[in-house]
Length: 521
Image 1 (cartoon, one colour):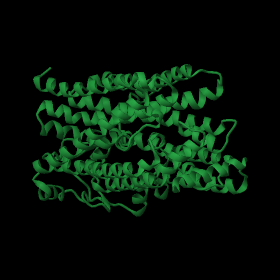
Image 2 (spheres, rainbow, N blue to C red):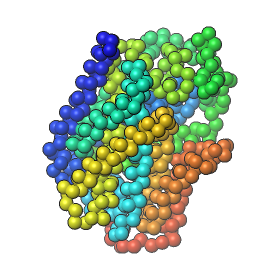
Image 3 (tube, one colour):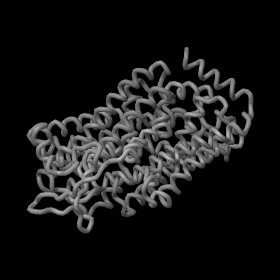
Image 4 (cartoon, rainbow, N blue to C red):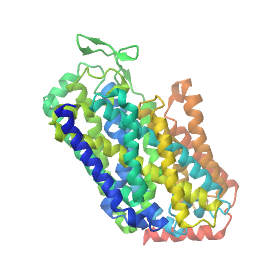
């Protein structure tokens, strides 16, 4: 091991040890009861709530997937995706957060999203809760895998150890498993706070250095002007490929004439923002905030963080193409642009600290997915089936679930599809379409019924799978991101079925009125 690699490793290991220490610190408190382990006893302050929400949401996709898209095909797809996510973040905090915080307590102090659905509609047979928990189990397990892909790619690239990809995936998974397993929700949220700050600082620092080393705005613009449609947000650059690799002539990457980014493409990218309304790891943090009155402050912190981080990530991909135009020849490899720039700009020890931002992004998401899956399995599937089970038994079920989803996530990461962007987009669509419309109807339409909730959730999840695997291949308008049609169809199904059925219990509407009044007070 060279001195450079050793110093870089010191910075990374120091960060990992701090994360484990936080998990151990919260172990005693988190293991006291289920409310504490799964929801932190609704004790998140404004800063922790905001930073934990955004860090858990963005994942390794922010520092690797999004810059990779911008590096390979220019600003079009990356810009509109980032804009859609920024708008979705603001809308979610603005219209959903406060009412969900209040309504989840009105609905018999629900501590998970599936439990909220079940108690909101007085689903005594737990049909809705079971379907929701299974949906979370399936799509979040895929999500966890996407984060473990980040671990493997990160260590393999940084330490030039492609042959150790499998070992690095497993190593990263074990680190996250340890502090999530022992520390529960509060350990996850406190580590997310640190990770969110680290991600933000890493993005800003690397972007500023990128502009400096590339000759400022004028230098970046001049270099990228040679690549057709690269800076055009209404266009998309088209790399000239040979055997999936970009063609180089005398070290210069070759591009075609580029293509227009149509209105359908733009709408498809911005549809990513719809996913926020159905993201359990985000919604659960709304439910965990100390007081509803604190949400306003959290909203501003979260939205500012999100705006700066998203557009810094896009800019890093563009500046990275100007700074090192021919280093990465395919879309998957391009996801390493942030890492490559960091190693180039900073001395080894400092580079290790900055690069921990990539691990922070992945860890802050994978730990959230793992705790969400475990809470759904223990609280929403096991608890209704075994009503006499003690809290201790349920918490052991949750821990076993964390281990199981970790193993499954490792299997996904080693399956061969190593594009973080593609894996995340599929899971994001599944959760957004299955839960998003139902969350909005549950919170804002008193007339929504239990049969409509079940039908809407099922139709959203099923349409994502069908559209992705059978319809999108038809091309044209059918090539739209599967979240958009699935979300709209789910919303339509909920509306129509609600009109055709009746609210089963009059107290449901009374609870709705209490939640609305609580938001207005």
